[in-house]
Every structure is written in structure tokens, then in C-alpha cells.
Length: 247
Image (tube, rainbow, N blue to C red; front, side, top):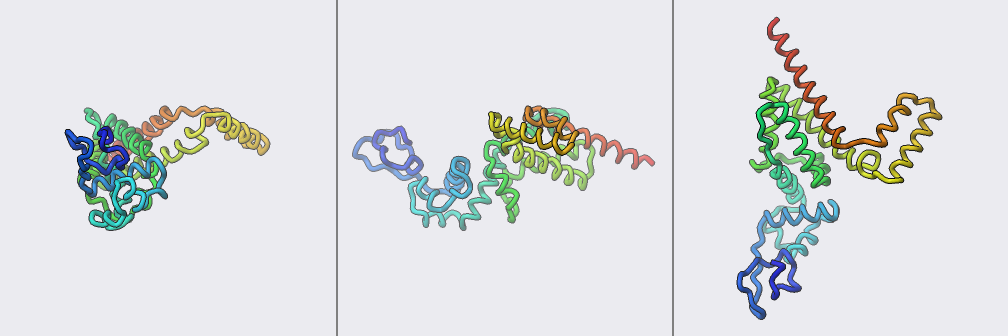
């Protein structure tokens, strides 16, 4: 739509593509929908942060008055909940044979999704209403199916689901911080050097020995290491449950 010669000066999301549009011909406004509003809000959140997601900002991005948004959404909280569902719907279900590989690939996909939209971690942790979009629930259904295929009971599959989800969300939050993956520069290494001096001065020998590895952390290898621990934990849990059942 922004490629039309006659569309100059018109907000990029406000005009639908009109084949054969000539100069002097009035532009046709793209129909406002709930999905357009949510996708606009998601783009604003990704580029400018959560605080920038306002009705006025969304309206300006779509080329409409903010009040017109209320014909499609209840309020800002409704939009924020819908952003969560939009992001979850983007989860790509891994297709592979073993539950172990599905667990690993699923964890990586969830991490990819959160890294693409890091502010959604805050929205998910603060969300109070249930998810009602079936497409957004497929990721949850997939994960629970993986854990059931591993041999866990329904109750244990739910607890494992929480453990995996908590690990991925916590890891991404740590990864985006300055001490792990967020700043691999002189400031980052100077901060670790200062921690080394503090640890040595306080006699914290274990921390002192670990700090060089903390300073040079391969975030991909570290993430996979944590997922492998969880997978091994599932195997151990299933084996222990089967032994108890045979007694």
C-alpha cells in the first residue's frame, strides 16, 4: 500500500492496496478489524515498549481516531491480552519422532518466540484472564502431549509443563539482561572483573572459580544444557514411577 504514487502522505496502515489507483482518485481506507488493531499494538510494543501501547498511539498508527478502536476491542487490557494470544499463535509445532526431540525443539521454539517479542513475558506473567483462542492454545496442547508421550501422568505432565515454561521464560529474561547475553562488550567484561575482585576479597572461592565461565557464556549452549537437564529429569521421573508401580 505504501508503494502507490497517490498514497503519499497517507498513514502506511490506513489505506488498502487499490490496483490501478491513479492520481486524483480518492484512496480507499482499509477496513478496521480487531486483528489489525492487535497486530499494530504488537508492532508498537516490539519497537517502542509496553508503555507505548496506548489507544491513541494505535489509532495514529492505523490512521483512525482512537475512539473507533472501541468498536472492536473493549479497552487496552483487552488488547494486551490479545497480544499474548497473537504471539502464542505464532508457535510453530515441531514435527519429529521422539518425545525427547519434540521437547527440545519445542523449548527452542518457545525461546525464539519470546526473544522475538520479549515484552510479552511481562504480559504473560501479569495476565489474569484465560486464553480463549484455540490457535493460541495449540502450543500448550503440544507440550502436554509431549510429556504424556514421555510416560508422565496427567498430574505430572502439568507440573513438568510449568517447569519447562518457567525455565524458558526465566532463561530468556536472564539472556536479555546485561550480565549474560545482553552486553558482550567492555562494560560487560569490566563488570565481571569487578565481581572477581569482590569475590576474591570476600573469600568466595566457588564464585571466583565460576566467574570466568559466567563472563564468557554461550547462550545457545547454556540454554540447551538446561533443557537437557529437564529432559533427563523427565526420564528419571518416569523410571521411578514405573518401579513403584511394579512393587
